[in-house]
Length: 115
Length: 111
Image (cartoon, rainbow over all chains, first blue to last red; front, side):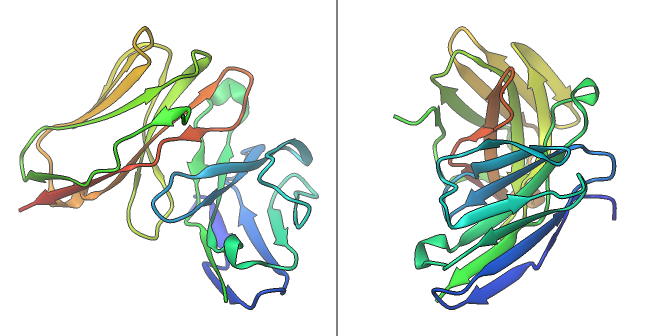
């Protein structure tokens, strides 16, 4: 499978715990995005990487959230001191360099439940 | 008011019907328009991608963009039960990477 992959697919945690999600983009896609989707809503943008540089962050990304893409390949999203309001689907997407198009291709998502 | 408005549905149609899905938006800077299909508990799947105004056809799907009215549409011909899903419109402005999504329209195609 050459699409965007995310791990884990599901995560159940207790309030106050830290969680980390991983995203592997499509090969040779240098742009990577994180979104959050709650029930009945469309995805909301969280952050954007071009190669290893984090170039854009949403106000939704509070101090408890941190994202990295250390080698410009896979990315991680960490949530510290989880709250019940963090329960959502966390989606990762990737795009090729702009000269090849601006489509964003999404992974299957990580569903987080905070008890 | 949200930047992108989309009727959440559900929209119920019989198999074989032509389906029309729509979004309106308020930001005149939007230039890139996309339609995604999302099955329950899955990630969004890109269906159509258009730049600026005009029509684009791909198989049973046709996307239309009317920038003067700030209105985009997705038409599905000969709808099938397997088309039952939530359809999300998304758009972005030149120079901005983030996609702004509608809430999604839930479509139900009955056999």
